[in-house]
Length: 220
Image (tube, rainbow, N blue to C red):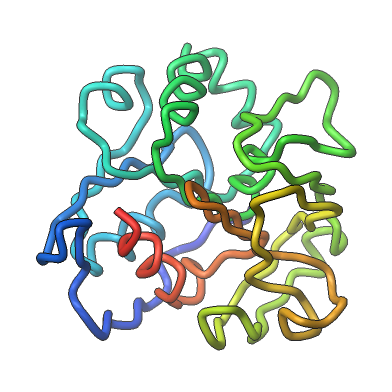
């Protein structure tokens, strides 16, 4: 994913983030900060009222009382290698297995997938969401594009940069966005959700569209 000089402008939330108790909450959200678009996610989440914790160590992951976790875009095979190098993979797998809510964008979707149909040599996923994904499904970085999607949450301004696509989805997976058609159509699947996870092929954080981040915080 290319570097960006500054975070995209963030649209203001239309209502306060609400916790499971029904009252206004300030959830603590970790962002895996080994590589990729960390700053844009952090700015968006803080604007929506969350406390953000960059996760680069096992301690930040396990000792920060996280209510949720974001896996940002970047290079999925590089993030996979860094997770193992910094001894984060095993504790992350354990926390996700215990049900930690998670939002993944672009490379984050690939990390969450149960299967990568075209992995880089030695690449592994975290196997959280029962989907199969194809990396770089829409072409190289030169084919990057920003477009409006019709999603289950309404129109979303999305940036596609070497984006993956969902090839197949298993039980318990809801399709929340397709590219080129509405959700009821037959376009490539670019957004899915389960009770625990939201996985998006695209980057709403780069366009300043808070729709899915707001919905994710509402889950916490």
